[in-house]
Image 1 (cartoon, helix red, strand yellow):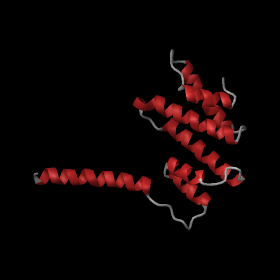
Image 2 (spheres, rainbow, N blue to C red):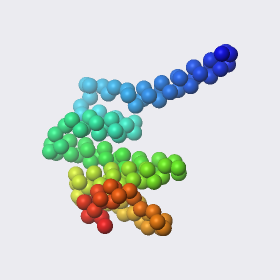
Image 3 (cartoon, rainbow, N blue to C red):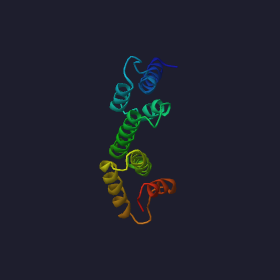
Image 4 (cartoon, rainbow, N blue to C red):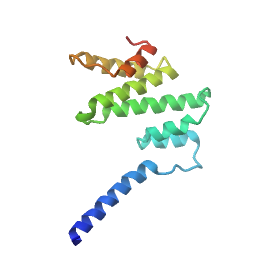
Length: 144
């Protein structure tokens, strides 16, 4: 292997390692749960935040607020991350996240508005609609 190829391989491995370390990076245990979740949201690490919250009591009002905030931000992030090849996947994820928000807080107007906006876009595309499981979740929170 030439020096040039070895250098290129090393650079690629370094980039892959850097990307993985961001997602797997540990959270400071001295932070409060709320601070940890805020940090994860700021870093767009929603699945990690939801995994942490999954171990908590969903009936605790503080946990419900953290879950609502995480799902809402995850949905907004899914909507606003542009990658045309994955648009349907992102919109289905956004709808699923907003559905979770409404299960926690049926009065969340931002989630309702975003769902209506996404569904209006789907209405303009003949033969397109959200995935069946996403539609079922939407029906559960009052969208037909």
